[in-house]
Amino acid sequence: MAAQFGRRLRKGATTTAVAAVAVAALSASGAPGTPLVSGSGDPQSTGTTPPPDDGAATGNSPYYTELPPLITPDKPGTSTNLPVTGSAESGIPASILAAYKKAEQSLASSDAACRLPWQLLAAIGKVESGHARGGRVDANGTTFSPILGPVLDGRGFALIKDTDNGAYDGDATHDRAVGPMQFIPSTWATWGQDGNGDGRKDPNNIYDAALAAGHYLCAGSRDLSIATDLDRAVLSYNHSDAYLRTVRSWFEYYKRGTHEIPDGTGVVPPGLGGTDARPGSPSPSPSPSGSAEPGPKPSPAPSKPGGGTTTGPTPEPTPTPTPTPTPSQTLAGVENAGTGTLTATAGDTFAERIKVRARNSLGGPLARVSVTFTIAGDTDAAFDGGKKAVTLLTTADGTVTAPVLKAGEKTGKFTVRAIATGRSLPPVTYGATVTARRADAIARTDDKALTAAPGAEFADTVEVKATYKDAVADGVAVTATMITDAAEPAENDKGPYFKDADGKTVRTLTNLRTGADGTLKLPKIYADGTAGTYKLRLTTEGGAVIVIELEVEAPPAPETSPAPDASQSPEPPAA
Image 1: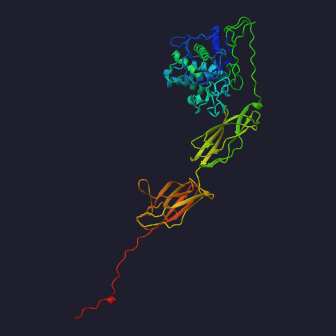
Image 2: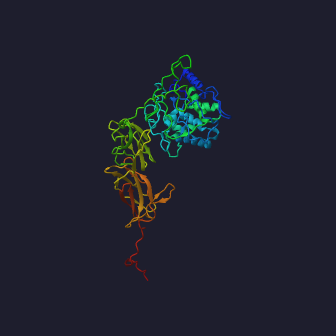
Image 3: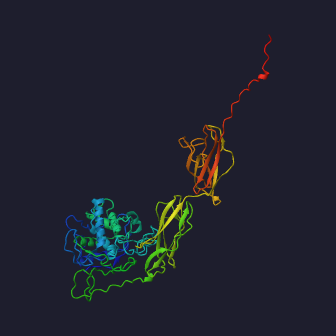
């Protein structure tokens, strides 16, 4: 029979008595115990607990303490070609098994020295989530509903304040372990992987989670073919001697051979049935009795499905029924709740607020649904407070409104997505556009004549002010061009000019912008040697235009002596 004590252990509160019960259960059942003796080259438990590494991947959250069946596969060594037959209890759902093996192959390429066996991932996946609730995943490997550990609020479990604003676990106050491999959000932020190549790192996806777990277990210079390194890796995942023993029991079991079963047909661990999260409180601890052996019972305990035999007929235990949510309580999806066009000028606030509605299976509103709004794309736009993602709960009418969205200085398009937090449901996607700052009028701030002598610089500076709907237009792009006086003006090749940073002559300036008061002072203007009247055109983003005259004065004519008057010529000399 598959030995089982309690149903889960409370991490952080595991006592010596509980550990003793674990050892007794392993010994009494005949299941693989500790130390684990394996084939040549396999790691063997050292019997001692190495010092812990950094914080546990799961936040030391609870796990399932069910042990392998007594009758183990008679296939020593590592199995590669597994039969598609056998009991659901000892088998591994197809997608889950594929994810474990794919992670092993990936690590064999990226970190061959680690020697990660897929059976170790399988053992951890078994005790953390029962292989994603018995393989209840979609075609991409994502769980149909989130697998969440209890709230880590310090009451019976570790105290871990929120690190992800509820983006993964739907809790903006405290963290919870997430997904089939039960990562806490802060650990996922560091170790999360895209194992199925869909461009996302989703802790609720078994391919992503298994690959992340592999990387985590291989951290540093660990060689998992060495017993101490393997023990250290498992304890870094959840620092408990009893956890190590349980994982090693399943590890040894899977190394002796297992088989593939269809997705969704695996045994769901006690208390994990239905669509809700993992149980939020630990099972009662075994009462101390002074002996690890159970007292006499009127009849033998029933065997687990796929386990060993008992003496005499034993009825199957009646499973505890799992409450099934009614259609009015079941989230069917989120939808747009009337959000209009999202457009704003750079630096301004979007007038429209993003609003979504959560609906149940009957099409009605569903309250207290966690919705995460995320800004995606090449933009510096952000929600109020500079946040790129926020998580909020729907109200009684099923709606929730995102915070005010503010445009940055970067123009262009971006996307805002609203999704039911941690659910495998389609998101609601909104397109948003940030347009450049605009001006509908531009004028000089004075009316001084702009003149210069040939080859000299203009004494007065050109200053203009831009407005939009009679208000100051700050930060507006302006282009200045010396133009010809033709029916269709073009850049002039003579007359007044500007100088660039290298002192070279240019007659067009771009990337000019008005200041906070809407004004713009142009750089110095120089005159070449050609006299005449010239034109300077300024255009703004938004279409405002002004044309200014520049006068290069002709030099004055040189003074000459008057010609002599013939009528007043001197008299000829006397004879």
